[in-house]
Length: 201
Image (cartoon, rainbow, N blue to C red):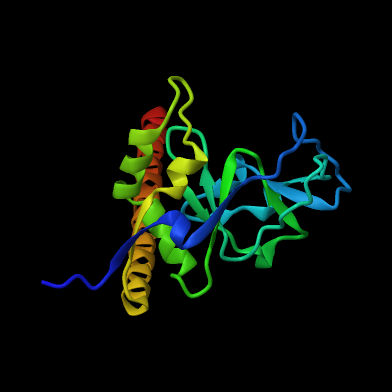
């Protein structure tokens, strides 16, 4: 059976750079001209929480490389090197990634950014990162490791289909969590009602 996809290294279909090199601790400036996306502001499911991002000013000599819609943030350290798709339409001002992120910028027309973010979060890529991680207490991956990550590139129609399936699964998970939450609330109400009746007797 002929494969209908190609397998490439990440650096062949995207540029990879480090987050903005702040000097020391990231300074907080309430009236700053930029926002900084840190790990606490991100989720592989929900993306970037722009409302929680720190406002700051550039302190390094390097000019900021502003985040763009379609960029992917990959955690350089931690127990999981998760990927986060960036959508700057909800950002209040220009934003940069914190130093503990790698910024992956897919080449135009190479593949769909959302599909690439999805693939980086799946088990094959996560196992690759785990295998090549360094450190004991705090794991981290080198930039070269990320650059050499194997990526499968199927036809665009297949990419769209996989993204649609991921959206459906995410919605089903959300509904299931809601059902569980409602069920727990009902059980708590029943328990409270029983307790109150016991007290009244």
